[in-house]
Structures are given as C-alpha cells and as structure tokens.
Image (cartoon, rainbow, N blue to C red):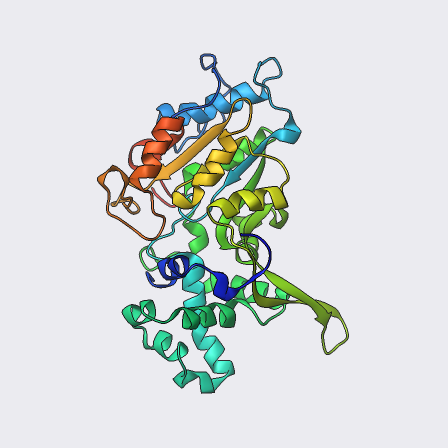
Length: 352
C-alpha cells in the first residue's frame, strides 16, 4: 500500500476474513557442531528434527566469526509475524475480539448508538449477521473502537482489556497463549545478538501495548498496520496525538515488505510466518545474499491447538490461510515448514 488511504481503502476480503469469523537454509551449511547446552537444553520445547536443526545451524554459521557465512551483528535482523506465528489466532484474531468487545463501551458513552447499525447487530451477538454487515458498517466498528482517542487513551484501554479478556477455549489471558517454542527462538536469537522485530498485519499500536512484556520486543521494533495520528492540544493545553480513521500502512502481504523498508531499513536475514500474508516477507528475506532462514508454522495439531490450512489436506480457514500453493512454494524455495504436531514437544508454557 502506498500513501495515506482512508479506511474505505481496506480490502473487503481482508475485513470480512477478520471480522466475520469471530527445511532449509540458503547457502551451504557445514555439519552441525556441538553446542553448549542451556539449562533444560537448547530449544527444549522443540523435538529433534530438521526444523530445530535448521535454526541451530543457521545461528551457528551466521554468528561464528570464523564462518564463511558470518553475519555482522548490525545485519542480524530477524522478523516474525505475530498472529498464528507467535500466538494463537483462532477462532478470530485477538484484535478483532477486542474491537467487538469494545462496542458495548462505545455505546455506553453514546447510548443513541444502541439502535444504530452496525452497533445494534454486534450487540445482538449474532455472528452470522455481523459477517453480513456492509463494508461501510464494518469500517465504522474499526473507527469507533480504534480511533478518535489519544494514543495514551488507546494504550490504556487495550492494557485494561488484556488484563480481563480470556480466550474462549482455554479461559486464559491472550498473552499466555504464546507459543513456547517460538518464545525460545526469540530468546535464542536475542542472545546471539539478533535484533528481533514483529512484522504483523495487526494494528501496530495494539501490538505495541504488550510486545515488550510478552516477547521482549520493544515498541520501536513492532511494524504493523498503522493509521494516521493528528497532533494537537488538550483542554489542559498539553500536546497530544489523536488516532484518526485514516490508513497509513496495510502491513500485510507486499505491505509487510514495504513496512520493513520503511521502519527497519535493512533486509532481514531470518523470517518466520504462517500464512499467505507472509509469503512476500519470506521471499524478500530469502532474496538477499548469503545464508538466510525462512520458516512457516503449519497448524496441524487440533488436539493441542488448531488444525487448518488448507495445505497438507487440513481444513480450510480464512484466518491464517496456509494454501497448497504456499506449501508448494516453501518446498520449492527451500523454506522450512514447522509442523506443530511433530516439531513441538509442547506448545504453551502452561502445559504440564
């Protein structure tokens, strides 16, 4: 996406798909050398196999000074999609849950909205009816819940919601539903002087509220879908920024690459995703010179998490779609596909 666009510039399919549904490396690697084990073992939540080995080999050959594929610390950029890559994205994206659950609070401030669409439909709890709302009504939900307040007010509202909101399946805070194996990868890379970024289709301001506490990634290292803000002064005369209903960057698909250039300014050497929305980011990462790591998480464990694709014969999903074409490209390009079922010994930190 280029330039500033209003909310009505958002692709309808993207909006509906969110609101309605409430191994290998480039270059030659030398054989893996013995590594010093951390307490509990290196990447302890990973099963031994090609996926884990790809990560270990990549870190070794890019950080050992004597390696011909050594990468200087300034160039050690690793990017991670969030929804479906770092934490649960089913049955709806967390930010969508936030927007829908914020509607009652919006109506409480302006009771006349109770009988006005789309607020009346959302308050009814009818998901099918919500899915059939016109695009303009869906945009109104976003505008009412994500804009029209100061940046600080929005941060406070999201923080308060995260303290009480629970995922319907596990009845746990959303911030506890991060994937333990990916948390270990983040820490492993950070320990080896990689700078880790979240590059997400979700709202940049939304993710920045919890990224540092949840992932050890500071706000300035979060690249997401961003709206414009307007500088002004409050009633007390103090300067402030107000969130406006205008889209600045749609950080999805090709927009992720554009966001990386805009916000980071360096081509990543490692990229992690899980869906068709991450394809361009992985292509861009692997398109650079030297050793590169590209990995995709395949959700194929319905008993411990969810199973959806439709790649590998899994059920189709509009949330986090992993298409057969993406799976074929991964195999052709040498990207590593991570099987949650086979490659992860445990998925969540709270598992026994």
